[in-house]
Amino acid sequence: MKKKMVTALLAVSMLAGLSAVNVMAADDDTITVGFSQVGAESDWRTANTESMKSTFSEDNGYELIFDDAQQKQENQLTAIRNFIQQEVDYIVLAPVTETGWDTVLQEAKDAGIPVIIVDRMVDVSDDSLYTAWVGSNFKLEGQKAMAWLDAYLEAKGRGDEEINLVDIQGTIGASAQIGRTEGLEEAAKEYGWNIVAQQTGEFTQAKGQEVMESMLKQHDNINVVYCENDNEAFGAIDAIEAAGKTVGPDGDILVMSFDTTNAGLTDTLSGKIICDTECNPLHGPRVEEIIKKLEDGKDVEKKAYVEEEMFAYDDTVKSVKVDDKDYDVTKITQEILDKRAY
Figure 1 (cartoon, rainbow, N blue to C red):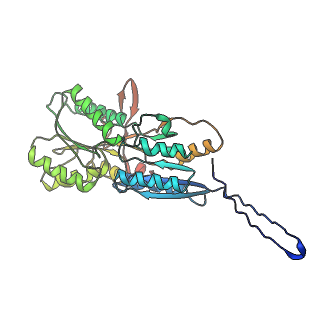
Figure 2: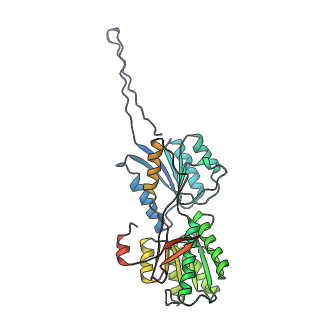
């Protein structure tokens, strides 16, 4: 797969009517990877970027060309075309949204450059436009979180209560938003919960706070806030507390979240976030494993879901069941938090 950079030095001597040609060739085994990242909108994204940068380092035999798209798909399209012009060996894409990739990925395919998708999925007409995808099962994350909520409410004697939820969604059209929203909506229908408001918080703390402030002004009966990532949860908690309400197991509102960043689990330890469902950002080693297999001419899995955990403030719910499969729920402790990689 890798490029061969060959430099030829031609020396011509005309002394005594003789000519000599000396050619020196050098192989450069460095693998060049172009990585188009969504941006830096969250703690999760920062950890994801660091995982890629530390994996694809010069010491590890790589040249990483990193591009921050600043949440704009047009920036990613430009970055990918630049990677193609630079003749990188591999393109890694963490897409802003699922759609709109057919043309540029066809260009990469025509150039013979494998494309590896990470985190969010792409919706393309031809799956051969990308080589492999690594990421999370976002709908399953939502399903697990909702199964936890149902079990928690039952355990607390609130199973027959009218439950009003608000959904602070992620970036609309992103795989994480689509999957987590679907998980919530299906569960609300099944359990008879009311989704009284849904609005995007764009996966950021500032927008999460802004959206929560608006929702609190419009609804005074909110029981649960379903935040589609930790940073939105931080903003929502700030807004709730500023409004004079409380969060936590004995508070006015339960706040649920996704990602399990260090800060997110710190809030879970205090009870501000009642349940945090993991979305593992450490994709660098997984992508490297795919590249190494491709370098060796081996087949790779088209889609690879990562294993993820669930953490809660207490041990009221020890496990949840989704589609006849059990998933453990871990009570967060400081010892667990101290050992976390992100």
